[in-house]
Each structure stands twice: as C-alpha cells, then as structure tokens.
Length: 306
Length: 237
Ligand SMILES: Nc1ncnc2c1ncn2[C@@H]1O[C@H](COP(=O)(O)OP(=O)(O)O)[C@@H](O)[C@H]1O
Ligand SMILES: [Mg+2]
Image (cartoon, rainbow over all chains, first blue to last red):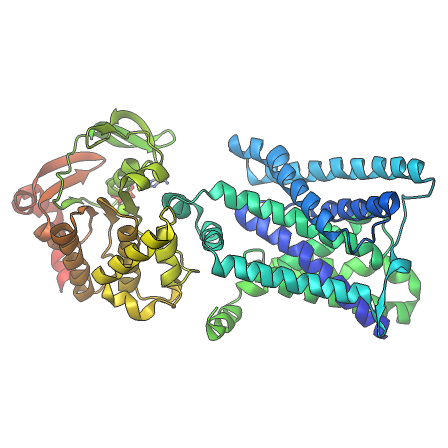
C-alpha cells in the first residue's frame, strides 16, 4: 500500500511537470501540443544514452536533459508551428501540426532505440532505471528527486513570474498579447520562452520516469492522455491549473488502478487511463475552463490575494 | 491625416478621412454608434488595414509604422475595454507600461504618474481586475504617462462611469493638456460634455467626417444638435 502511495506521488509530480509545459504553451501560443508526451520519452532516451555511453547516473544528467529538452521545445515551435502561424493557419491546422510532429518524434525515438541497441548490444527498446535508484532511510530516490524538481520548478516560476520584469511581461503577454505589444513588449520572446520551458520540464520529467515504469518507444501514447487530463481538469487557462490537475489525475489514476487490480486482478492495469479520460470528458462537458476557471477558485485566489 | 481609407480585411469602414490634430489641444471625435470612431483610433495606431491615405506626425509619415514603434515615439492608444492587465497589480501594470525604460527612469516615471493620479497610491498592490471602472480608467491613463506619452488616444474613457466620476476623468484630461504638454485625442459618447472641455471637434457619420471645426462650433452645429441633444438629455438626468 505504501508503495502505491509513493508511486502515486511520484507519478503526480511528473504529471505536474509535464502539464505545466502543456498549459504554458497553450496560453502563449493557443495550441494544445500533442507531442508533449513524446518530449518526455525523448528525455528518457537522452538519460539512457548518457547512462550507457558515459555511465552518468540519470539523476545527474537532469541539467543536460533540461537544456536539450528546451532546445527540442524551441525547435518544435520554430519548425512545426511558426511557419503556419505566419500564414495565419487555423487552430485546427496547428493541432494537426503538433500531431504530425509527434509522429515524427515517435519515428525518431523508435529508430534511435534500435541504433542504441546496436551500439550497446542490449535491448534498448525497453528499459527501466529502477535498480539504479537510491534510498534515504527507506524513502526512494525517485520520490525525493521528483518532489524536489516540482518544488524547485514552482519556486523558480514564482520568482520569475512575480519578481522579475521579464516575468511580469510574460504574465502580461499571456493575458493580453496585443496590449502587451502596444507597451513595447516583444511577445514573440515570451512565446519562445514558454516553448523552451515546456520542452525542458518535459524532458526532465522523462529522465525520472524510467525509475517509475518501463519505457518503450510507444510509452508516449499511454501517458499523453494523463497529461491532457491534468491540464484540462486543472484548467488550461491558468498555470496553477497544471499543479492542481497534476495531483488530482496522478493520484486518481494510481489509486483507481490499485483498487481495480485488487478487485479484478492485474489484467486491469491496461485500463488505468479510463479514469483520466472520464475526468477529462466530464470537465469538458460541465466546466471547460477546469477547476482554476471556476468562480470558487477565483474566490480562493482573492482570499489568498494572489 | 489625409484621405485615409481603412477597415478590417475587405470590409472598408472609413472613407476619405481628412483630419488634423493640433498640438497641445484636445481633439474630440463624436458620432453615432458604429460610425467608425473606434476604428479611426485603431487606424491611427496601426491596428487596422489601411488601403490608402497618409498619417503624419511631426512631419514624419507613420501610416504603416507598427504599434510598438509608435509607442516609442510617444503615441499611446487606450482601447475602450481591456486597457489594463487585470491579472497584474496596479504597481505591476505601471512597471510593465515602462517596459522599454531602464530601472531609474522607470521609478521616476512611475512617481510622476502617481503625482498626476494620487488616487492610485493607496491601491498599488491591488489587482487591476478588482478596481472600479473609474480607478481602472485612471490606471490606464497613468500607464500612458509612464510611457512618456505625447499623444494620448482615449476610446470612450467615461463609458459606464457615473456623471460625477466622468467629470473627474474629464478634468484629468484637461490637466494633462494644460500641465503636462500632452495632446489628447478623445472619442466620446458623452458628446456634449466632452466637447465642452475640447478645443477641436469632429463628427463622424457612417465612416465619413460630417463636420470638423472648433469644439464650440460643433456644439452649436445643427447636425450635432439633431443627432445628439435628445440622447445627451437622457444621459444627464
Ligand atoms: N474587428 C472588427 N472586424 C470587423 N468589423 C469591425 C471590427 N470592429 C468594428 N467593426 C465594424 O466597424 C464599424 C464601425 O465600428 P466602430 O469603429 O467600433 O464604431 P464606433 O466606435 O463609432 O461605435 C461597425 O460596423 C463595426 O461592426
Ligand atoms: Mg467605439
């Protein structure tokens, strides 16, 4: 049972990191990025590569995955989206572009895993880091590291968004890009920044994910549902939504699966995404702006003077 | 501006607008709803499609100068709605207004804006979204002051304000002209009262200039009276 809880928190932490990026790029660029989960798997493979080739512990390679992930995020914006935005493409076209980009990444990941297998003479199309994890007084490293990453990310984002001029400009651009432009803010820079951060956080989460579950090149297709559910249930129009949604979806998925597997046997694990899908659909039908878009949330905010 | 033709995409709204804004005076544009007043301000600022004509500012052709460049030249445009960032505090709104300034200069400009709008001093840490209509309008005008505005375009700044508050805003506009060397361009539904504080008045009808001259002459003009007096009468009771 305690293992289930630990797994639930680690999974929620990673979902928060992944959903944060999805929400931020949605706010700045107006397009849901279907390649977000593949960003994470790219991160997993970067960590695996550094482990195999130079023996670097995946936790220690996080700064590298962070930066490479940022570059991946910016490339996504520049290559897949910006040319279309310039030609005034509709939101549907942009969505299809991210879907296409996702397929490209999937292809690259698949091919790369074969290449890596050939180099290392191991099967790299399926791997885990679980045996590499450390332990502090019985607390597994993945719990410590993923929680630290979320805390650092939130603290960093808070300081950036509320205490720096660039951050205020970023919030201004998110709320009203044309007014921000009129104030002399380069809104394009804020967009680039959101894509950098989105890719960076996703790859970072991806380098921790193999401590929690097996990675195969198709893993992205399983987790993309959870990421979207987290962002949508929390509210796609509010950065804090990713935080709220990440924990709700992460914990519900883990506990739901656990209970079902006790009742019906381990075969049900495959269906763990049903709960996320359901919660996402209910949110879209009943309150498309998610939890952070409700009047009650606004009252909480006012009360906290946020 | 000369013979300005503009609109949105293929939809032309303004036709052959000839209009001059004298420096240091208040120019007010009145006209019925949908006559293109807002579109006119947007065209000046560069937010519409301009098909022909010219806009000049101090001898420079700025017809196709992008909005953020105009901001740097000292031209500000405050739209009718969404003219402040509601998720940001008053202080943050003022800081972001001076985004292009460096630290010391920014502080100096914010202090200056707060001298003109001392009403904002007590609410610096409130979110702009929680302000009253009058406070919000003052904040919007203060942000323009932070940016060292020379020309201040205001789209219906007194809409939805009580007559008393509207008068406060009008007084501020006069103060900006008299004490701070700013040239306000005003679009108003509160036509009569706006023209009373103005120097120059234009009346738009269906995207064309129906009348242009001194504000006093427009107030007394028969076209103006036939269009507006009934409406103004209702507004003032
Ligand atoms: N963004 C827009 N796209 C297309 N048409 C618009 C847009 N904004 C205003 N219009 C049209 O332009 C005309 C003039 O509107 P506007 O300039 O707002 O008039 P006013 O401010 O005098 O009430 C109206 O017919 C309006 O429907
Ligand atoms: Mg208007």
